[in-house]
Amino acid sequence: MRRVHRLSGVLAWTAVGLLALGAVIALIPVRTPGVQDCGMPIDFLIGGDFDRLPDAAGRIERDGRVVKLDPAARERATEHPCSQRVERRAIPAGILVVVGSVMGLTAMTLAMVRAWRRATSRAPDDTDDTDTTDKAEVA
Image (tube, one colour):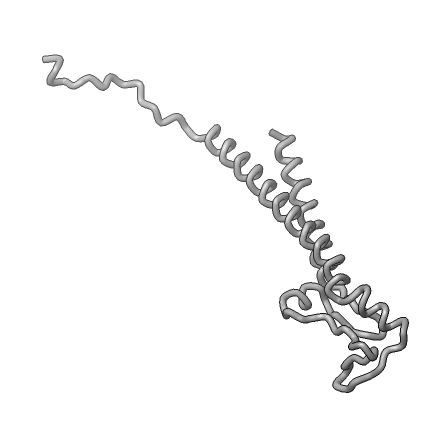
C-alpha cells in the first residue's frame, strides 16, 4: 500500500509540473519579426486572430497604417505566418496539459481507492451471528 501512496504522490507532482509547463508555453508571446506580433498562442487561438500577409506589392497594414515590407520580412510573413508559429507552441502546450490532466486524475483515483480500502479495512464488522430463525416456526 505504501507503494500506491508514493506513486500517487509522484503522479500528482508530475501532473502539476506538466500543467504549469503547458500553461507557460501557451502564454509566451509569438511574433513574426517585422510583420506581426501574434501575441500569446492561447489568445491567438481563442480570439480567432488571422495572419497578416503582404499583398503582391509587399504592403501590409501595421499599427493602423500601410507599410511596405522589405524582401526578408515579406518572406518571413509568407513562409512562417503567425498561425504556423502559434501551432508550433500550442500543440506541445496542449499535449502537456492533457497528459498532466490524465496523470492528475490517475493520482487522485489512486489516492481515493487507497483511502476507501483503508476505511473499509478499519470498519467494524456489522454481521450478527445470532440465530435468525422465526420463533413462530419453532413452536
